[in-house]
Length: 486
Image (cartoon, rainbow, N blue to C red; front, side, top):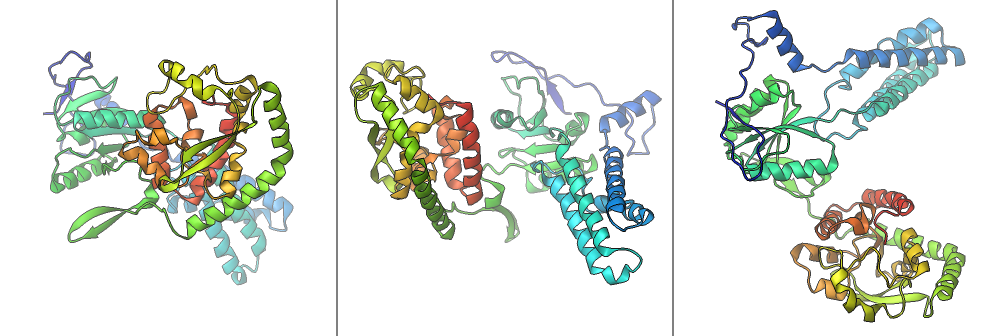
């Protein structure tokens, strides 16, 4: 029988106790007796079916409003417009718009489904134009497209509910998965089914010993999905039967792959030799898309330098007036494949900063190979402002023009840092370093060493032109917020 573990302190071990018995009545099994009306109400409330009709009613109201506007602005009769708008919720229902979203769906998935339904309806109306002698086909097409846009906007405006998850696997794997899920805040872990008792409490999450009753736990906690983690020691037959049991209670089964930081675009499920496998595409380190990135970034760097010449001249004057020494600071950094290059920045520290560094080693606030001090005494007054606004990095556009750096890429490392790199940090060196990157827009110097390495490795392995564009957009927000810039 499935057992539950109460929450205990990390240094205590609580014996498993039997959970509260389930109600003796289950509506899907007519052979069981009904104990009382209260049991029926409790069981039905626990199931909490998806409420479709309120959402469909709002989509119908939007379609009617669109029909009224269309009839007023075109020659389409009001009766025909209302008759054409009435079946709109049924079209969305047939397209799966009201189906419960799968785990991992983006927020815009439903909006895209509504817009796609509107496009299809528009195409059907235009294709059947010869048969619509009594109505204006263009007006009906306009009505269909407007209904799709209205429902898409409605889907985007709705606040998505966080999926409720039950984790199943070894205690260590469950704890690690909970940390990963908590870092995004997009899911709610309501229970955990463990292969053995755990000595450490899983926060406020209910814990159960044994995987046989996983479907019961999912139903009891009204979860949307069970996440089966690697190392759960279930045979293929047991996983299949668990899938059946979860389907009976209206929940999904998600099986962990053990892969780290692999985007869905790089993975696909395939069957070969009777085995179901997950194929992971290699990182796109070469090829036409890289050539496009190179050409676009170099062109943008040239245009940016020419446009920012007046700004750079003003900044150079400010640096020289604030402290003696050259305004442009050059430093040797490690580029792609370990090649050394000279990186240029606006000087933000005093000229004696390298000589003063050994005296400040004890003040280092970084937990890895980096050297970071939030209130570094070597930073000049103008330099502190330049760092907060990231304007000190503008001369690096010249490194992009020369092909030594990219606009977007991992952090450019110092040679003495690379000497202390392990296996994972060295993955950064297979591509060009960048002026901005995933670590900069995710917290910059506020991140731990392990977090910054993981973000850079995630960028390298999952690179795409779309990811670069998203990072550039997020860079503007990061610069404005000054988060982690010191």
